[in-house]
Length: 117
Image (tube, rainbow, N blue to C red; front, side):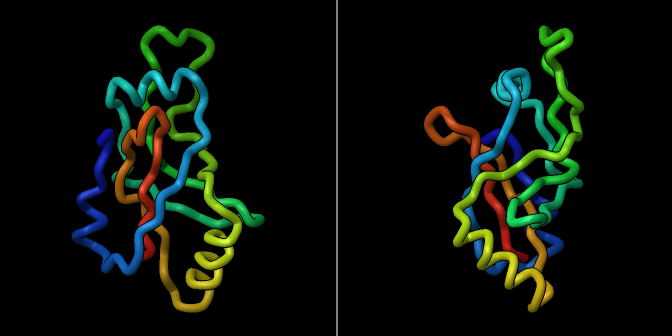
């Protein structure tokens, strides 16, 4: 477990949970391995049939020099097209929102648990 969003469990009713990959740069992965991540103020949007996470803070890697990226940049989440279309329909019609619940390692990959709230 890298980061956990305890506030989401308190503020929202979580209907369903999904697992998504995340597109990261090399220095961001090294920073996550050191455990420097915060998802307390983050949220997820679906735009142009793609899923993006906003407000996720990954601290710059100490030895990254010029290769460090913006700590709160928008990052793309990797999900199946079928899951994205289902979530898009639920968010638009029923008034649900997508909230990141946790960031964790699965084998050597970094995953984000997305909650339909």
